[in-house]
Amino acid sequence: MSEADSDAPLRGGIDLGGTKIEAVVFDAENQAKGSARHPTPTSGGPADVAAAMGVAMHEAAQAAGLTTAQLKGVGVGSPGSVDGANGTVASARNLPGWDGSYALGQELEHALGTRVVVGNDVQVAITAEYQLGAGRPYASLLGVFWGTGVGGGLILGGTPWRGRGGAGEIGHMVIERGGRRCPCGNRGCLEAYAGRGAMEARARKLIADGRDSDLPKIMRDKGRTRFTSSVWAKALEHEDPLATELIDQAVNALGAGIASAVNLLDVEAVIIGGGLGVRFGDPYAERIRAAMKKHLFPGHQDPDVHLTGLGDLGGALGAALLV
Ligand SMILES: [Zn+2]
Image (tube, rainbow, N blue to C red; front, side, top):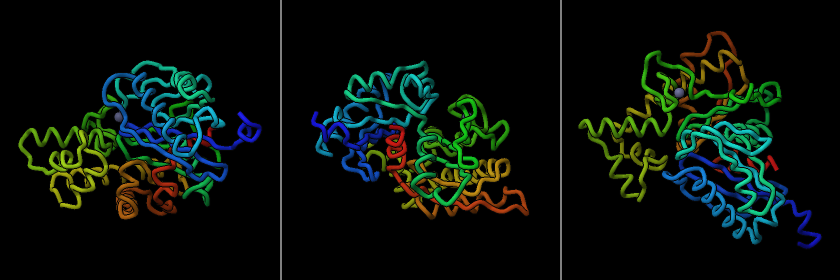
């Protein structure tokens, strides 16, 4: 490695989602220089997910004209319970076979030949929004990442709030006592109504019970095996009644859950991101704001509601900021 390469400021960021793996190389000005996207494996286990992440990062580096070993390091935003000190990830329930603890950082260091730092996916994304995105004008933020699950991240008084490592689980705010079963095992959580995984399970069950919907056909036409964000978006465009009904329920659930969190924390702004949040865009950020309105404590100042300023790349950029 030449002298110039050794202080090259290029960093890698990997956003590990329940549906896709996004790997991006960023320069010192946080501009994307190369990227690659792969579907998250739906079977196997953590080793298979780590292998797919390695491939995606190698491709992103290649697109940026270098090798992964030439990167200053690679940051990873991962779901589940992350131990940043040793790079392990446990109980990432939206990933296949990932119930126990797995040394993701160590595995990726072997595969990539550079330093790897692992952080929680929503926490790195909200930190990126706070530093570089839609959260810049504010000292207190709630990030809501509406995707396969519903994740949350908090900045309170300029400081990320992680609690004892488990803070921000807005997807598991109870919005309906005794309600639908959530992927976490409890009942009535926000994610049971708004998480893409839970919505897909609900849609498939209702279709199996005889409800009519274009969702499966749209999925097949797109060559997908899941109801991805683009599948839902297309179904809404076609005014598919089942998709419309489930998304309406999701918006109302998000309004109740987010407003409850705001009533507790009085944050200045709510930032909406995640696969569905980014795909649906500003009109849905506005719908969520309207749905919050009827649950916000009257007389207090309402928070601003924005779509993520960094879009789809926010997760990968936040991960790269860990390096
Ligand atoms: Zn739950």
